Amino acid sequence: MADFAGVDFLRLDELLSDEERLARDTVRDFVSKEFLPLVQEHVRRDGSFPMELVPKLAELGLFGANLHGYGCAGMNNVAYGLVMQELERGDSGLRSFASVQGSLVMYPIRSYGSDEQKERWLPELASGRAVGCFGLTEPDFGSFASGMITKAVRHGDGWVLNGTKRWITNGTVSDVAVVWARTEDGIRGFLVETDRPGFEARDMKGKFSLRTSITSELFLQDVEIPDANRLPGAEGMKGPLSCLTQARYGIAWGAIGAAMACYEEALRYAKDRVVQGGALAGKQLTQEKLVFMLTEITKAQLLALRVAQIKDQGGLHHAMVSLAKRNNVDVALQIARLARDLLGANGIVDDYQAMRHMVNLETVRTYEGTHDVHMLILAKEITGLAAI
Ligand SMILES: Cc1cc2nc3c(=O)[nH]c(=O)nc-3n(C[C@H](O)[C@H](O)[C@H](O)COP(=O)(O)OP(=O)(O)OC[C@H]3O[C@@H](n4cnc5c(N)ncnc54)[C@H](O)[C@@H]3O)c2cc1C
Image 1 (cartoon, protein in one colour):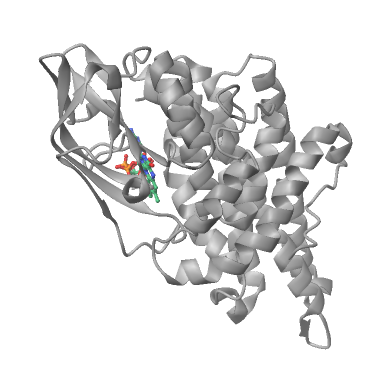
Image 2: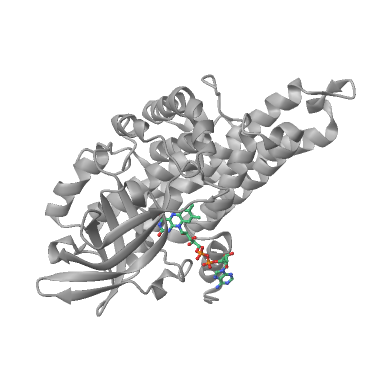
């Protein structure tokens, strides 16, 4: 695994700076040497993440990597995207850990937090000494979270929170939860320390997908917090949606990593596997599948790179991210399914990666805006007519 070469049919490497290549190669090496040897064990244990890697991920600057100041690496968005690609080449659960910590916890604190909140949490989160989670989804409100029931009511100088959040990545290992709640002035974000009385997180078990990631339910019962814990700059759904745009951007790149892992595995397998006296890779039906994979990976790379350039220039529109997330996850899932198929019976065991990526990508297709929801966002953009 340590010699994973990536896929670069159109010589996109030539468009990258030395720093961008270095960031990618460093994470590629880390994933090969330190993450992949552990992945099988964590997949077999439903809902567990190799927490011992958290300090190393932090040391590599991978938490809030495209944020500036407060101990963050300050990478540009190309380098950041390549980092997400490499993490997800390992597993979607690994990329999810970094996405949640960076885009869904550190980003809202950096963008909407007070100076005290930034100083209190950002260095801790960047260094991995603290872990955070993002509580938006509820049992009855996923795609349209603006219907949320969780409430924050003013109480003296502070707030009292009540509600349930479900499908929350890293809930049970978090020190702080970014909780989105309804107030009399609309949706607001709150930083809730997870040791506050009335706060409880429980692991969700039985997942077929994203088994290397911790998924939790959060219960808030009369949780009291001071007003200093409210994110002062976040007003309405714009707050959580802007965080989701950041995370979705990382997913558009991450999906390429999962697709590359599947393609590389399928190509290697098909060259070695002999059927009817010849290499599987020499059969026309196989070749059509491999060429489809290569073509879609290359198109996804071009899409992600262009979105990164626009993001670095400050011109990013959330619908561009919708297009990239929707397309790249969709083709990655198709590629993972084809790779699984090419591996035959071997494709269903966890000595090989394709099926793990395939079932992971089913989650990635659903979270951070489902495939259909991104279609509706794009449709609204081009027609001017909102179907949602
Ligand atoms: C492993 C995992 C980790 C997660 N981590 C987090 C996290 O850390 N924090 C967090 O807040 N959330 C998290 N989520 C939740 C995730 O974001 C939601 O599952 C997602 O938003 C979809 O919501 P839902 O599951 O309620 O599906 P629903 O919204 O009920 O959608 C069900 C189906 O209906 C379709 N649909 C919905 N509305 C329409 C419409 N108007 N027209 C046509 N079709 C429609 C959808 O596309 C989908 O196919 C996670 C989920 C998973 C599985």
